[in-house]
Amino acid sequence: MRKNWRYLAILLLAGLAACGGQAPKQAKPQDAATPLGVASEQLYRLSQPLALAGVPAPVMIIPFSEGVTALDTANWNCDAVTASGDLTDADGDGIPVNATYDGRCTWSYSGDGGSLSGFWQFDDLNIQDPNDHDEDAGVKANGAVSWGVSGAGTNVTVNWNLERHQLFRHGGSYDFAYKGSWTVTTDSGNFTFSYDLSGTWTPSSGDDPWGDGTMTASGDFGGSGPGCAGWSASVRLSGVVFDGGKVIGGTATVTVTDCSGSTETATITWSADRVCVSVDNHAACAPND
Image (tube, rainbow, N blue to C red; front, side, top):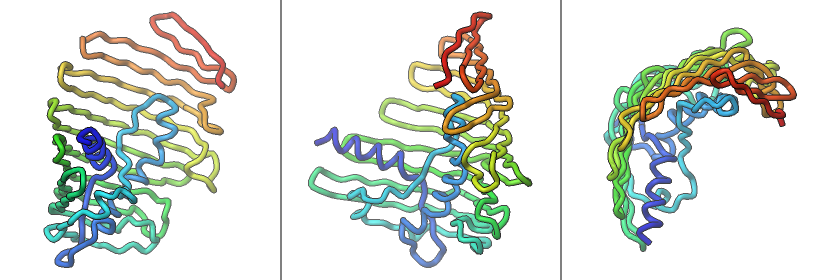
């Protein structure tokens, strides 16, 4: 049973990030989490092409985990959370014109298997809609969010610093820039992850901005953890073309330095019928299935 509770705690932590409201009225957690959840969904629309190109998506999906019994029946206290600024949302995309959230939301749950408790905290978290008359205009978010879960032998705390998270439409393309870091504290030790990724996404069709398209981007990533003093990676994408759920053109250069300090660089070249990888002047190709 303890194992199940540990698994539930991890699910709760991975699926949720924040709770906010509009003072002095107490907010329901589901309603309070919406702005950050929608902002994260907007930012994450590029996660599929990034993943296909081998780039770690630098933001986390933050739905409000419906159907999780522990959360559905938890006791919530969001009285300390405040929202300030312009909360207008004329285009109905869930992103306010310019809102800042501060404060802590706590929850607790007791059931047959034991008890869990947790918190979400906003620290000057600002979310903006670059065009409140266009639901596909993008989003801008910066600030800090922290959350944690404790109980059943599990203690996990995450601090997320959103230094710069933005996705803006300019004509027929989108410019994006994600910079921030994670610090995760567990019973096993501390883990860190940092990212700085920017680039341009040009949809193949104006009618479907999040379908096929072409991406050019550059990013730097790093991290550390128990047994690893530090690792780093840099990625450069040039004219990477996405079509029908796969990459059919462009190049990527990836340089990785592992925990032991060893560095290796690989170049990936895509075409419609094959993928070639070159490392240290040695190349290998495979069908682009």
